[in-house]
Image (cartoon, rainbow, N blue to C red; front, side):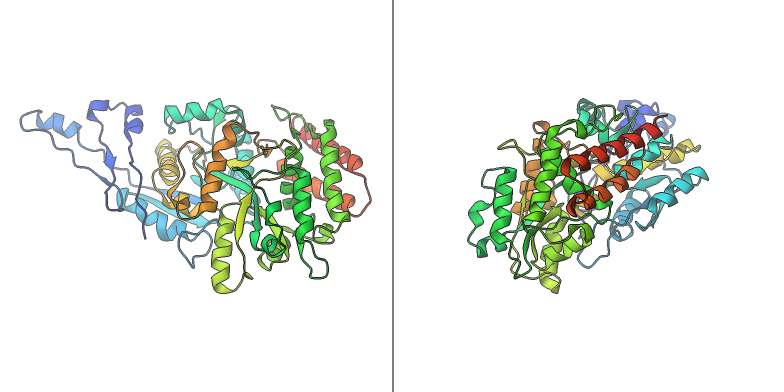
Length: 479
């Protein structure tokens, strides 16, 4: 079913082109959930000459083709493969309102995605639009390959973005917004509440409005469900590849540690004694048998599989994980009972958490063809802002707006939407996306975590080595 679309206006674009506000034509939405169509422009009888009337007619879209690459993320309808909604749902809606502007979408597999894009940039064959997250795309901005989006974002929204240093780190390069900011993924922990109910320990789960807890409270909850004989643990830590850095960085931040300085010229976590305390906490979870054994041999895929099988209590999760449970209970890929609940990462500040809010999605590559670059921006803006298909398929929150409609039927998703509003008050975990060499730094972290877990290094040695590796990488790319 096609969702109702938001009001859609190109006024700002036509003004920029020199058309006066009095002559601008607004493209509206139907009220029956259908697509926007150009509204006719009819001058009152005798009000203008034929020439003047012609000048007020809607400007016809150019006949051009845009190339869009997308990572295979999200589903819009049951049974879809990840990313299929781009062609099956999004493009048909675009074609209804802009049939002249043909969009060709190609899904790019995650395996080798960065190499494919950087090769295309080098050979001047990059797509017009790339729908992916800033963890990859900001690096292309540092290469000078991305177009500014500041001329397509309304002034009020742009002002909000620029007021937030945390948000600007995730959507800009050199102070210029190059990533569309109408997307936010609110990450936290999703737990199987059923396990705690069965253990008679539901009271150990977060009880306050925003579901916060301290490291000690978190550990007590893990102890309540950990059962070596049954092969059930409170949590699965993993350190076989770089994807494991998320949970470590998130909880280190919950100890009050700033990971980087403001201009990304230094990894500062090693300067705080709280980092050592956080790593000591992780090691204690392993040593006390509260997490799945041998985390140095496990990956995020293992953690997710254990969670689906009720072999661990929680995993790092976005809103999309609720669908994993809903759909999995139907098709048998998830073991029941499984009552999911979203909670925050533990924090040493009672009643508060360090928030994992990832903002930004989608970029436009610079193009010698000004018309194509202009329409690439229009397509990206429309995709992110002026329809609900993207929001629903990607389980996206709008950090500049209200809770999206797709959360309305699920109190747990409404909780995430409410949590997203706390980014104005609580610390936001710095993802480090704007750092040159960021992927290299991620790859340097997990071997050190492995050494920690198998007793080859102490928590202090671990954070010191990680700091040196990270700062050596930063220095290498800042020469």
